[in-house]
Each structure stands twice: as C-alpha cells, then as structure tokens.
Image: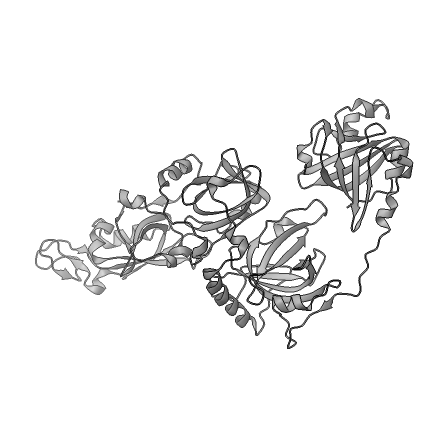
Amino acid sequence: MMHIKHITPGVQAGPLEVTVDSRSGLHDSLMRITVKDFTGRVNIILEGNDLVKAFEKISPDTKLTLSNFHVSENYDMLSNYFPAFIQGTNVAIHGSDLAWFIHISHDKMPSIRFTHKSSSYSINPDTQIESIDLSQLYAHKEQTNSSPQKLLGPNNERFSSLQFIKDSCNQNTPIIASCYAVVFDSTSSYMPSNTTDYMIKMKITDQSIFPGYATLTVFHKNPQSMVKVAGIGDIIKIEQFSFKIHKGGLTATGSSSSKSSKFFLFALEEDKLSPYANYGGQFHQISEHYHFLESLRKWVTQQFAQKLPTELEATTALSNITTTSESDILVRIYGVYKMGVAKSDPSAIICYDTNNVTQIIVPAEREKLLKWLQPGLCVRVRSVVFENGRISLTYYSDIHIVPEWMGLCQIPMISEKEREMQRIAEAYIQPEKKKVRTIVSQNMKSAPIVSFSRLKYLNYGIDFRVEGFVVKILPNHPRELEGMICRECGKKTSLDFCDKCNIETDIKCQLNLFVWDGSENEDNIVKLIVSEDNCFKFTNLLEWNKMKELVLDPESMMEFGVRVSDLGFEVVETSLLI
C-alpha cells in the first residue's frame, strides 16, 4: 500500500488509499479535490468539462483507492485556464503537503475505487466518462433492526463480564454495556485513512473470556486528550460502550461524539482505588468498585504468571527485527536521553535484550510514550521496524511496562554490554543534573541503576544503584543511641568528646536514610540503611551537624550503592564527597 508521502512525479502503480477532504470548482473544465491519509495531503486536479461534471457530486469522507495514476509537476498546463497574474503553481499545491499533484484527464485516467460507508463504485481507463454516476454512493442508508439496547448483568447489575456481554450480543444490533477488564495491549493514538477522527485500540480480557479477548476502539478528535496505558495488566473500567460481534469476535466502540462513553485506568501494582488516568468523564466510586478492582488484580497476577495471552508471547528478538515488517519487542531500559537541547529534538531510549543493545528514537511529538519509563524497567514495545541501525516507531507503536513477576515475559536485569550502552549514552546531550554528593566504588559502578518502583522485586544478595535526595535521617542525633565512639580507646558514648582520652568522638551507629527519587510523586520514598560497620566509610568521618547539612541539602543528589541484605536495602561501597 502506497502513502501520500511516497508519491513522486511520474506514473505510480499504487494502490494509494486516501480520503476526500474537500473539493473546489476552479473552472468549467478544472476541479481540485484535496485528499489525505495519515502521512499528509495532496491535490487531485481533474481536467475536462465532462470529468468535472462526473465528479461534482463527490462528498468529503469518501475513500478513494487509486491505481496506475499520473503525478505531475507541469503547472504551465494549469496556467492556460487563468489570467496571467494567477500562477498555476498556487492552484496545484494549495493546501497540499507536496510540490506536485495527481493529474486526471481523458488521456491520464487511472483506476479508482470509491467507497462511502458500505457502498462502493469503481472506474478504470476504459470507463465511458458520461456513464460515471457517483450519486449511487450516497443513496444507501444503513438499516438497523432497532436502537442499541442497554445491557444489565444476570442479576440486573450495572457491570457485566465480557463473556456475558458476548453471549448477549446478536449479529445485527449492538448493545450498550459497562464492565471491568484487564488491558494487555494498546496502540498509540493515530488517524486511519478512512476517517477524520483519531483512534486508539486496546485488547482487553477478564476471567470469564480468557484466553479470548475483546477489542476496544475509542474514537477521539484530539490525540493530546487521549490517555496512555501505563503497563500490561492494568485494569480498565468501561462505561456505556457499544458492543457487538464482528467476525466472530467481541468488539467495543466509543464514539468521539458520545457524551456517555468513558473509561478509567487503574494501576495493577498499586492498592489505590482511584484511577491514574480517565477519558470522557470524572470518576465516581461505586459500592462494588473495590470488589471488581481487587478481584481482577488478584486474578491477573495469578493468571499472567502462569499463562500469557498469545499476543504477548509473539515477541521478536532484537537480532531478528527487519525493515520489511512490523514487530513487537521485549527489552529492558538502560536510560532515556534527549538528543539535543531544543524542545523539538527527539529522545533516544537505550535498551537491551538478552544478547543485543539498540536505540529507539522517539520524536518530540510522541514524547507521551516516554511517560513512566525509568532505568531498569522491562517493557514491551509494539509495532516497530528496524531502520538505519536503530529501532523506529510506526503509527501504531506504544510502550508498556511489564511487571517483574511476569516471568514468562522478562529480560535479565544485568547486561554484559553495560560499557557499550554507557558509551552510547555519553554521546547524547543530557539535562543538567543536580550536584552529586556521593561517590560509589568502581565495582559498584557496574551495577544497574534501578527505579524505586522495581525495588520490591529484587532478590536477596543483589547489588544495584539508586539515585535520589535524602529527605530525612534517623536518629536525629547519634547521642540518642550512644552512637559516638572514641577512635583512641574504642569507647561508645553519647558525648562529642571522650571523657577519658579528651579527643573528639566520631559517628558509629546505624543510620536510616529516607530517600526520594525526585519524581512528581512525593510518596516515592525508600529507606536505605547505613550499618554501624559502614558508618565511617559513608560519613567520611565528618562531624554530625556538617554531615547532616550536606546530606539533607535539597540541591544535592545522592548516588548510593545498595545491597539487599538482612538489614533491608543496605548502603555499601558509598562515601560522602567532602
């Protein structure tokens, strides 16, 4: 299938599938029809009085499929129809994204298939122009047996299972229904070639229909207003969508003009009852909400740990990605980097799988895809291709976080190509960071940086790094615990000076550091523990008040080497910079 952006002057075999955006009568013998697809707009110039009359009833939103058509940059031909002060160039490319136009005339007649709703009509170079009648395209009126009926559950409850909804549908009449379900796949917001609305598609399932699923389509006018699914397994609450059976499968549709269709997204791995995103309306909690939400959270955690939807298993290794077909990939994030200082500059995601390292280039206009991405996360990236040594997105691409417990869909945490990824990252201009007030050992530098949300999945004994800001230290002072020691005699005391040796004492007690990751969520805080044995190394023998002032400086970012130990998240091989 050809797209508008691929058109160049000459005879094009096509097929080119476009939608009529507008038409203008320029002259008795000239008509301009502006057509579009998701890559841009181009003008069709019809030349000939009989052709103009044949096409005068063409309507916006009519889909055209053109084959063997002529693309021209001969503007002089157009100038012959107008006074000298009107340039043919302006007539040909007005409102177009290209510097040439599609020319249709008696001797340049293509094959065209016209489609409007469920009606279609075709012409070819042998068709007699006087026999062309496009009015029949618009004479058809869709017949429906009855208006959509609102569905209630088997006990008249408002929210139904997907299987109950499917069983309640017939082949002809859609029904209006509401449900809770699990999202396991979603596209980005994109504009199909046969509509003026944007759309997003999700695949959803629940206990009643798994391993089957329903396809949810949401039409919308503004792609910026459409929310993004964060992760595989998140819960969706759907209200007042139109369900029907299509080709044997259950589909749900929300129209951009609907005032009642709405949905809400809830994080799988949180206990919150409120949504992290909503579309179409405000969230109001019902009495059954907790039951629906928690039962689905429990079910998907157990089910997806044992068996995944078939679509999630069909991922392609980075080494097998091609330029000719779209693939879904499973990777772990090393880091996200801006490829310049301007707002319009793209970003690069450096990522890896078991044996390979690659980059995914994300244009600035699609930065919504970067939401929630942090180093160390395992993600599924849908619908990508390989171009110029990098992974490129398509119109349908989206990125979803994969929970760590989903072992059937995971990438190892540590890559053997850490240095290669570090070298790639250093080539990008990165945002200025806060001054780092700690230093970790060279051995610990090879450990991965892990986001706070992933810490609970780390196994005992693993080493890793975290970055953040210390917001609280306990104890308030070591003297509360007799946490001072004389280096001369080794006596533990609560005094700043040893009463026996008359020298200044040093800090030697367990320190609890409460560290915030610097994100918008101020609750993203983790407790790190400096053991008594590591206290000298960490504090660098600084006096307590000076050490506390340095650590709690809001402008100072800290990097910590951490080990999962009996104490919890224990700070190791890390020292304060003086």
